[in-house]
Length: 309
Length: 280
Image (tube, rainbow over all chains, first blue to last red; front, side, top):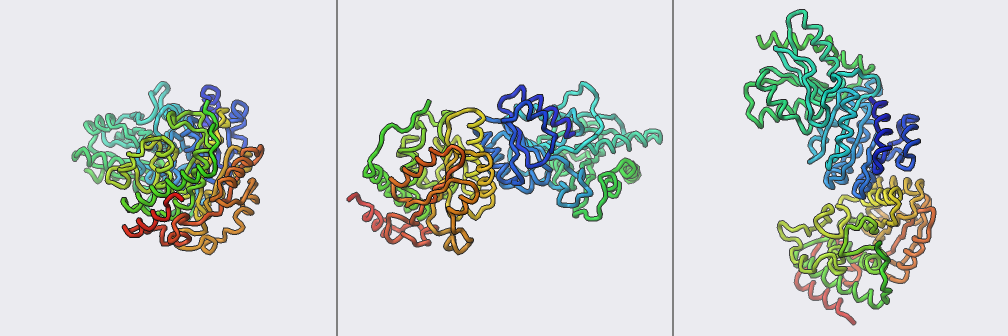
């Protein structure tokens, strides 16, 4: 995903003279091609995220379209007030990209986990909170964010995430997709972890268990038309996110169901529990440990159906 | 293209403007119960010199992309900035009759741009204005605009780490079009700024961070003018003007009395203050 980001930024920099890339001292060699195209529009702001965020707001207020790139917790909670005041309040159209989100850097410890970022940024007025599932969705969202008058936060994974969307899918901000249809349960997810749900659904199909899997792409704004359609078809929803269960996609969906009095739908939230994780392994290990890998999700789908009778 | 202010005003003319602004400031503070009077009174000469002699701005075209940018990083100085902008012609003075009233955009801190002409950024939470001004200066470099960017900081604001983050980056990027001015009135909200955090040597710190630094009397128009001129002459470094000022300047019973960070004048105090602020 991050390679797709670098490649797309390079292409966009050639097309858009106002595009500026700010890095918080990461991405060694990753932006070499970008710098060949637009060296004067690349700035390593150092390990100084607070200043970087305010600086980006200032640039945006002067007509540039700055894109900030650093590791997810450092570009969100580290400089939250600068996002709140400089970016969100000013409606400075900054694109904040958090790389290695969720448990991408699981083995680096809680300092590098981002399991609260969507919850916290979602609470700020008028900022898009996006979590693309694959590179194609990231590219589409990045392009749309750069045309949006609103600031945008995009949390991305790291490397090698498989494509999940079919070719030609209309992707972007608040554009949900049914990746796999089904009849028994609907799983609504964000981010690359949807791949685990796709494998789980695949594994259960021969057993006669039919799980639909949808990619929401955006936590804020939600694709409400899609949700309304899904509410007509499915009574049992699960949300899935590589994020704490507090405040992220699952919470946003619960709020939507409540606000629209959609009482026929039940929702169960799947994500990281309300604790800091300190018994460490890599991302695959940690997903498995939390029951968020394909095997764990398949088990959850089965038990959910058994529970529902 | 916006021109540099053409009219060179005498120090007497500038002082007369400063006096008028102080009168309106204390009156408004008393009537609307707006605090931070001491912090506003300490930076009047700095603002007058900037707005009447330094900044390339056009009150009739306040969003000209080539304009200089002034950010009141010490956002609690908004009551005096609002008076300055009215007097400078960004909006009629009558608009300030709403100051402090429910529903007014004129309150204790500047709102985001778009609500009050001439306001470049919403400040009030300290430590934001300087890095935002740096972003604007870097943007102007990229866009090849003639813009210079100015940020007025308080000494207490230099407690904030983001100020020093921005200071290091500005020096590394050789942003010579950025000028920080510190209203060094020696007080912050609850104590002497030097006692709360070890600020001294303040100018020395900025020099160590790679800035061109000058210390001046922040109430002396000629000194302010010269320091701004020498900042403009810098070709490879950002500049900081450490302006020694007196909190509450101009009203004897407010001078260097930190109670006026939060207090507003009662009718008797307003009368006494205005008596002192009579033109000589």
